[in-house]
Length: 400
Image 1 (cartoon, one colour):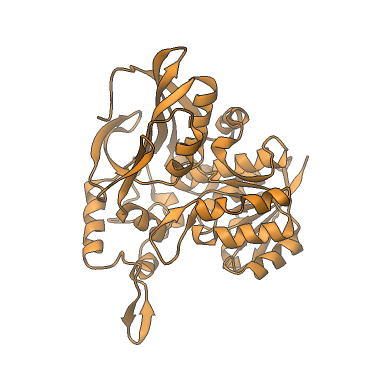
Image 2 (cartoon, helix red, strand yellow):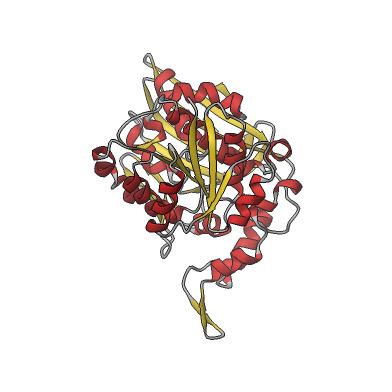
């Protein structure tokens, strides 16, 4: 059942998705890669062993997107451009009747805030059109949501507590660089921490909650509580949930650089005047930091991303840890990208496969944990992200 796919976005993740789709012509018989800068698409196309189509598109413009979609006539659109563009691309898919998949929820360009609400608002219109939209099919969100759904379906009667743990043990050699879009990354980190407990959201000052966690194959790392988008949907879709938190690793060096940049105003999203022009400091900062897509050849080390699920099975408390380890250099050998982009792009490609094959199907807007996790968990290892599950002592709290 071969199909045509339109991929929008030619950054690090877009490159991985294009490589992985190209490896599976039995599903993705035709590929079109589009971006505001078609030269980036052509550079990715030149790395592949099979020909693909490239195109230029302004993903902020619904009419331009509709024009491209009508020209390409894809069976599925994979959005791996900027999260600011979720709504315009979802609208264009709706107008053209093309199923939609993305990896990150909508972010407001003028406010440091990301949420699913405006994407969930498409629900009725997608249902009426008998069209499917799959949200957040990267790693976190994405794989972490699916780990939770798989645990809920196969290992628990109820999951009471979830901790999502994201560690990057890689080193790119720069004094300071971000592993994905600098603007999105910095806005995410400098926002208040937030977690869900007993039916309500609780906030903490940025990076104020710190623990140490011993990650398999990476070792002990400082982890900090952040707000992350998968919390918003998982707190609604996991039965019996009492608390869910998200933790990410940062080095002291990284946080020192970030604090200095914040103190001098370089992380601000408020416009400032410079030589009679208005510029947004964080967007200027993005232009002078290393491009995340360029980090692949110089990044060494591994990532470890997973979830700790704590709940009840057959009346007894149970706790498990499900995680993936990914090697930066191995990723670069395969798709010329570092592991951060790889761990986002491989789940997106796998989800796209399941949609095109009719295994994931439905009318409306879905977060990935609302879909059957079993076929995804069966495929994701052979696709490049093998996972492991470890039984933990339910009486021992590794984070408190």
